[in-house]
Length: 73
View 1 (cartoon, rainbow, N blue to C red):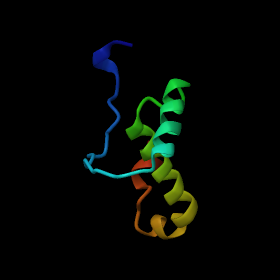
View 2 (view 1 turned 180 degrees about the vertical axis):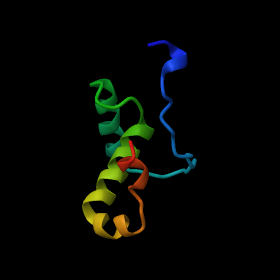
View 3 (view 1 turned 120 degrees about the vertical axis):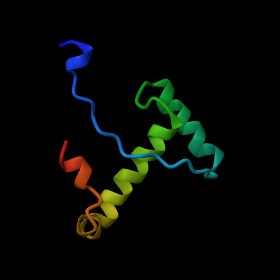
C-alpha cells in the first residue's frame, strides 16, 4: 500500500493545557516511557484521563456522545 492509498485517521483537535502533578507521578511516567509502554508524557496523561472517564462516568458520557468518535473507528 502506498502512502497515497492510506486512509488517514481523523484526529480530534487537541487543547494545550498546563497541569501540576506530584514529582513521583512524573518519575513513574518517565519509567513508562523508558520501558517503551508510552511514547510521551502527553500520551500517558491522555490515556489515564480516558481510562478514568470510561471507568467512572461511562454511562453519563455515552449519553453525551463522548465516545462517539472512538466507536466509529
